Image (cartoon, rainbow, N blue to C red; front, side):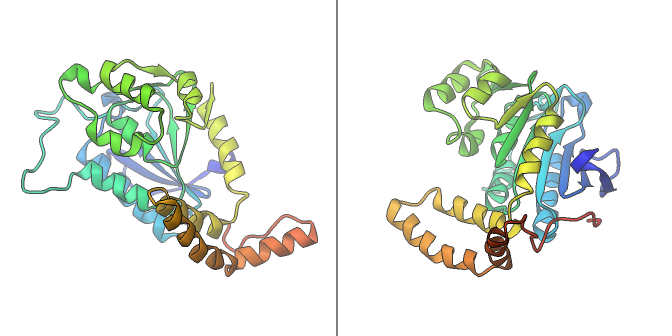
Length: 273
């Protein structure tokens, strides 16, 4: 419906992670509804593959990450496995951390569609996204202390999104917050009884922007986040000239002078991935 008419599916219905092309967006759907869309290795590798597809296709304007059904976005790691916290001692890199790294490098906007419970590792998946919308019945929680661990890995993508007092309270008590509270804390961009209404409204505004400006803009923003003032000022000086050289910048200025809507060079179409 609307912006999100599906036109291709790249994974089978039994996969832990579905990849679907819906208009200008690539949807990544955690497909483990019976497990409250808990994270598995296939979920992580599927999301990683989806991000690669989005980066390789200039007509994909954004990636939507969500969970199957209506009860859960993602409940975190699958505690029903034999040892949910085991890692390979010979490999210093962990799959979830590698996914967070890839998301941080992405120049395609990532939008979390929080359709229900967003717990533990699910908070990490939501936080690694650039934007987030939620259903008003969604709950957000870091319950790790109640099973004897701590959300250390999630903090790498969550710590800069929340005020420190709120973050510490969530980490140390494990108590959930409501979607309304998440909105108050700027953890999400919009809350609505129908999460797809919020998503379509956000997407309609996102699609008005220049595709090249958004991609290079995300690159610039993410690079500047950890820089000092002098470093960020110098980096911005090097980037601003590149923005002006794009066809979209020339079209944007011409459209402004002509008092019309810009016709961007890459709008995002309905081609199969």
